[in-house]
Image (tube, one colour):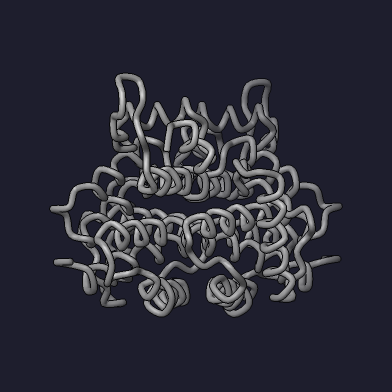
Length: 211
Length: 211
């Protein structure tokens, strides 16, 4: 298809498609003349992936670029690509705490992960994020030890093992598996957060109204 | 305590405290002379609340101002204040879809919420967010119907009813209850998302490495 048809099929405006081509986020089409290129289904799929990460995942364009580069590098294992995607969506953590206070929160977060028996890299940004959450909960006098965090860990692990891993097509192409995995990480994170806020509103309507 | 002591107790720099005072996010101290004011425990607590919403909740400062105004307005019910906090943390949704496609996704999202029997306002921003997630999942060929979303809804509702509602001190002051509720919404949302990414990494390490 021509670039105008690619635009119609994907819902992405032509100037945006040209930008993704220039940035190497979308592979070049097949050149059929000096001024025209032909695009295929793989281009439609890649554009949908970019839009999903952008609009639902709310990832910055530079982070999406990094994830796409990892997806396209067939020398990387699926686990490695997932790591790149996770690190790209993790927000920067700025503790605003003394070294000592921060070290205590990090140790507490690491102890929670150890007690769960989970395999998580020492440098995983989610460890620092958990430490920041532990620090903040503690400062506010809210429980933040392993017992208080356990229900969240259990709920998260149940969703990943019972629902998400099964949706990844391991029998097909590497590209399909890797795309499903990255999308699952980003989109299901959003779905879970949205559901939690909806549940909160509903429970609040019943318990708190009038209070 | 003096502003320098308030800064030391809260870990918030003096110029930032002055900014919060000017913006009305922190109530004025008790004026003890023309150039000095005295601050109390309520100021320390309010500063911790602001920092928690800022650093862990990652809320923009303008949204935090709206939430604080709602907390301070004692004419509002707890349910109403929670609504303000939820609406303040909800990101803007820009569908990038035809009217028809968007209406279909909205109807699907509303049907999912109806089927759950949840009480959610028709204008709640999380409805639009869910519609966008449904739209994106559908475009990517991933399941997005009630059955696929149910595990997320169930996990979210279980956490809210079994763990979060119980942590809100309803017997004490309105201020304590409302602060706990707002913080719970924002901080536990982060905790759950962090746990989900940690669980993903751990499962991926076991299932995908080498693939």
